Length: 443
Image (cartoon, rainbow, N blue to C red; front, side, top):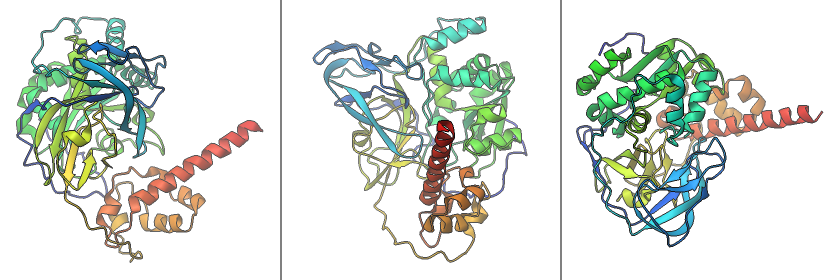
């Protein structure tokens, strides 16, 4: 892989890696769970409606709920078992909090089959675009990253935006998480094929596979397929948060996403290895995505590694140990909530020791938060705006440009929850805009 020299940005920090326990750990099957609570709303749209009854036996891959909203997807049984109840589950929401939805609870589960290389049954290389899009639409696929979106909707937005750049972000430049790294290392050709399918579906003319420059030796099997499909392979330097959409798009396209915007606004689309692999497995081989690769790690984790975990597995049961348990990366993840289950966006479950909570002290104006902010915000002054409820001033100071990377809280010697405070300002700004637009509409 060629190391291109344009992959940098102002601000950012060098985080500890903490990946030694799982970096070389091959993906294996998780121990069979006692039960699954399969969410009926994999995306934030209206829930799918159950088409099974309590007491009914279901087989792996059987449809258990049907979606009426095109922004939602049908739900399928990840494992064979029996419907025990219609209960609830919690999944991460886009704004760094949890959302709850109904779930089909399955018990008496059969042992999951091994995940093997599958024969191709659909010639996606020769299929025209209409056939390819139809095939993708039949799969009830979603994006395997936050915010989880129905893949058909995501592709539609990309086509409407006439995206030129499609980026597969496999940098994973935050501690502990190695799920996408292992997918690319072990299933590189399939991940690249899934990326090529997405490129054809979206119409992107430039396709890029971006990885951590320190890991290129593990991805040798992906290089030849990438070259075959005309995909650029780029090794980026280690610097957090280069893996956040706003940063990687800027590094690779030299374009900045507008405030409250998405990569689509600048003609780009960002995906990850898990999504690409799921796309290939369905489109080429007819295997629905019923699970995902999850990293279990952290100093308090009783078991560490990279595992295939079925959707609906209870996160608290999968991750044993830890006084502080996190869904996702430590920098941008969520503290595990009651009822949290593994869904498409769950790339890691991290078990950490209890942390002594230090009471915040007054800001000492050291400037570290602003110096390291990748969005170049005056975070200390935004903190003043939060404390004084100055939403208008926070708007003028560009608070919506915050990328929620967590660096400001991480470096603050006064232990101020700066990330949460800027997020609260952003939410207040959105509410004010909504009220203003609603008022103008009523007039």
